[in-house]
Length: 81
Image (cartoon, helix red, strand yellow):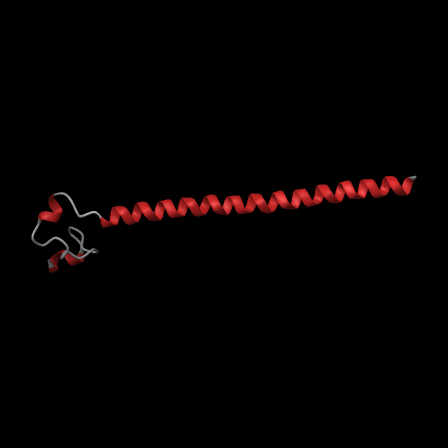
């Protein structure tokens, strides 16, 4: 009688362990899916913003784009402009 109860309890615990392992794997995959979707959305937004033409008064200046990125007002590269 005790051997039958042990077998039944062992089967129940093994089934529970299998379901717990499967749910952990499923939760991990779901997390990776959500992180991937967020990364794709950020990539698309950045791509769309980067494709837009420049707007505003800076884009209308004749030297727009020729000013060095590291040049700041009063900095060492300001004398070269």
